[in-house]
Image 1 (tube, rainbow, N blue to C red):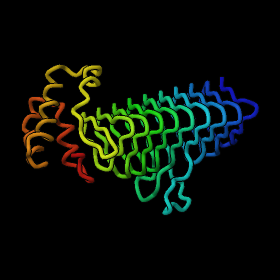
Image 2 (spheres, helix red, strand yellow; image 1 turned 180 degrees about the horizontal axis):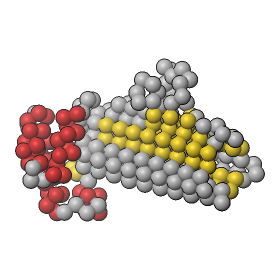
Image 3 (cartoon, rainbow, N blue to C red; image 1 turned 90 degrees about the vertical axis):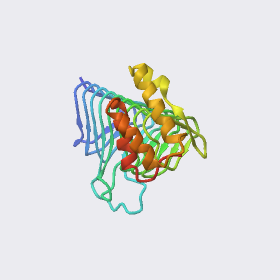
Image 4 (cartoon, rainbow, N blue to C red; image 1 turned 60 degrees about the horizontal axis):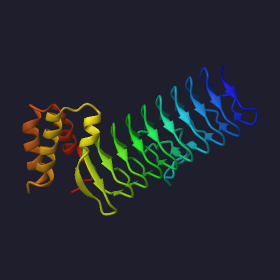
Amino acid sequence: MTQIHPTAVVSPGARLGDKVSIGPYSVIGENVVIGDNTSVGSHTVIEGHTEIGRDNQIHHFCALGGIPQDKKYDGEPTKLVIGDRNTIREFCSFHTGTIQDAGETRIGNDNWIMGYVHIAHDCVVGNHTIFASNAQIAGHVHVEDWVILGGMTGVHQFVHIGAHAMTGGGTILFQDLPPYVMAVGNNPAPKGINSEGLKRRGFSPESVMAIKRAYRTLYRSGLTLEEARDKIAAEAGAHPELAVLVDFLAQSKRGILR
């Protein structure tokens, strides 16, 4: 049974699933869809063309589905899409997309998003990520699966962060961060691979070692980026976990963190 607090304002056009709960003084807009078993805390505003899946926990004072902070935006009906089983803590803000991109901001499943996180227009966030408090993600950023962003990480627009990458607190990213790589600092530098995270996710010792060798090829061999990519690609046949790194390096548009 859906539970809506008497002080909440839910538009007649909003579509709420089974066992949804809406807390005190929250506002749910006309074009909002919320899936089963999702809870919304107090004083939260969900507006715009926003679709939220099932089993999400949205805490107090969040602002989801607001218009993008982009001067080119001119009222187009762009979207925010959030998947299933996400935890979204207090004071987070996620905006809809723009027609200059896909017209959609998308967040996947099973993400743990801590307080005061901002996810801007046209971002794409994968699954199983952790965004620590005050992480700030500018427009058009892509964050792949299992990424961990330390507290107060700032990410410049159009940056791409590869799967299993990790940043330390206060990191500012202006360039792409390859899969598996850890980075830290205001003028960030690569700091090895996220080996502990990989072990926890079931990567074999052989796979972790292959990724470490690829990291050394990329950052410590003295090879050009193209030469390093070719060498890593030659090893990907025996170690399939390197294929995502090879593809990432080939597709990077902002250049990788060096």
